[in-house]
Length: 472
Image 1 (cartoon, rainbow, N blue to C red):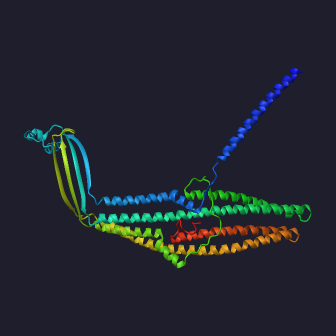
Image 2 (cartoon, rainbow, N blue to C red; image 1 turned 90 degrees about the horizontal axis):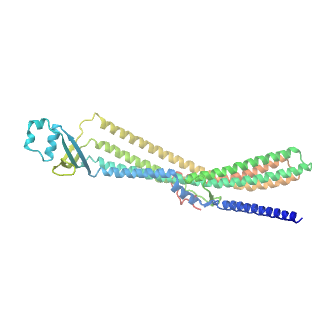
């Protein structure tokens, strides 16, 4: 018995040790899992102004426009360089037995002697080497003002790139506003879908109770189940739409698509009062950056025409050079010389190439003038369309707001009447659909109201970080 008890005790102790080991490992796993989940970063809180600022900093489209601006600025410096003298340095090593080369090299090295006049040395000289160090310079003194006009044209193109960057900022800001409100709308749509799913489930439960009591036919219960299935499908789509809206916001800001942000601005109506239509049209024609860009391009093209005319005029260039010739690279023993002068150039005939170039530049100028007129007309129409869209959205919000309370009250009455056996399931489901639709239409109208106002400011060229639709 003692042996048996001893064995039982040892087995019990082994089982206890095994049990504690398993419990300890399970606790370790649970703790590790908790730590892992606790380290998952929470979504960063994000206001609309913050989203817009991030977009203006990180959006790749703006980076491309900023690169174009840098290219245009470099073009100005390049054009200005033609007004300055150009200095060059060269080092040349040559060797050969060409009679003219040998004769000239010895002469430049100041090593020519009487023996070098011998006919055999003049006709068949031995190979000779020469190391030439040369400094040279040229300066365009006058080219019928072509270079000065080239600088002015480069400045106009730089101004055009600046205006294009401003317009790009406005377009990026609009997309950020649109995407941010898109997330708010998708969040509200998800809430509506969840509420509609709960309402549909409550209707189905009521139908089940009434069917079990023999108060309604089975078709009522089946209709309620079909409606619940439809609401569950809408809930699934609403969740996916919210994830897509968040990805669109990340893309608009220029951040990774899996970045987690939580909008903090409330999804509520704002009091937005635009100016009158004539004022907006006039403001758009005077402040739109893309119209200013076309004006700068037109001025640049007019300068291109003037440059083409300058090519018919004379050009005056100055040149100078200093040269050192030695028989070896390191040692001296050579000679040096300098040369300078002024050159006047006039193109008398080039086969009509310059006249053709002038005709081309004039045709391009006519094209830009026509495009400017077309752009002005398009801007006027764009402002009108945005103004009418904003006005319609404002009125739709008022109508949708009034319909919510009416639809909710209608649903409550129909539910009571259905419970009392005074209505069919079809009437109740129709009222439920109207209540859900009224809320969805209201938030869609609010979203469109804010976006249409932002689009109106974009059309008038006034959208910025301090716009009423952006600020809280």
